[in-house]
Image 1 (cartoon, helix red, strand yellow):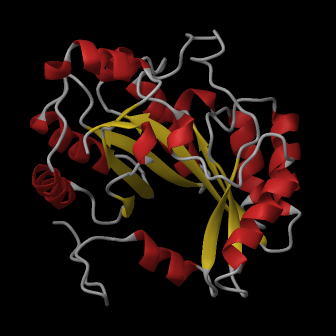
Image 2: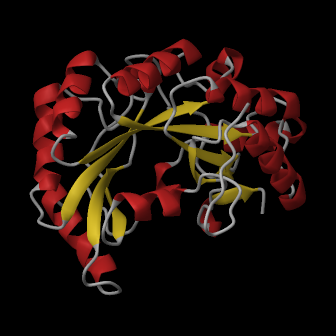
Image 3: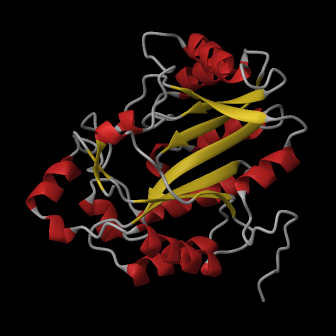
Amino acid sequence: MAKEFVWGHNKRYNDFSTYFRSKFSERVQKVSVDAGFTCPNRDGTKARGGCTYCNNKTFKPTYTNLLNSVSKQVEDGVAFFSKKYESMKFIAYFQAYSNTYKSLEELKQLYEEALQHPKIIGLVISTRPDCIFPELLNYLEELQKKVYVMLEIGLESHLDKSLESVNRGHTFADSVWAIEETAKRGINNCAHLILGLPGENREDWLEQARVISKLPVNNLKLHQLQVHRKTVMEKQYAENPDYFHLFTVDEYVELVIDYLELLNPEIIVERFVTEAPEKLLVAPN
């Protein structure tokens, strides 16, 4: 029988803000870093063009600038948020593209450069399951003894047919391996999943909740499918809009409620939705 959770704020799921407040003694904020990574399905290693839905500009903060070093981006991000809370601590969020897609020595240099800032107390590293390798995991296992470390892993779907259709370049077996290997080493992980990929239906999304619940997932990021400008998916949507199921607000709310009722209540839910800048958003509004 599933454990019943009772939260002081009356939320009926394991929410991220409560988890973060319980883990750290002070207010903590992520600051994004763009360290110039790419992806194996962009540079030709596995494919070119990237995922059909991907436009990194939809979530990249203005203070991240490739012309600036990691140190400078961290400094700018800390300054941006410190205006509100002087005593705040920060986690460097390596966000754009696949942030483990370099040699181990290069990765160490980038991560440890970010950790040099006195207010940085940890790292969140966004990546793909097929860009994680044992030597990196061994390094992060040691690093997390000193600072907070999380690997945010883009699973996107539990269905291989969907992963293939959006040009992910990896399988769900790769995702399972990545989640299990981080868990074995005690490294915090976060599974990133999209609800609404073309060709999937409501039963698929609810089954996804059951599948993810069987894995040693710590945190979960959900969001609805959005069609962004300057992506392959924008062209596909223009040519065949009937192939896409874009949620109404009420429909998506009901789906998320049903999804959560099936989800392992130990999993910490970081978010349910995403929002892109209006100028980059095609649909839904």
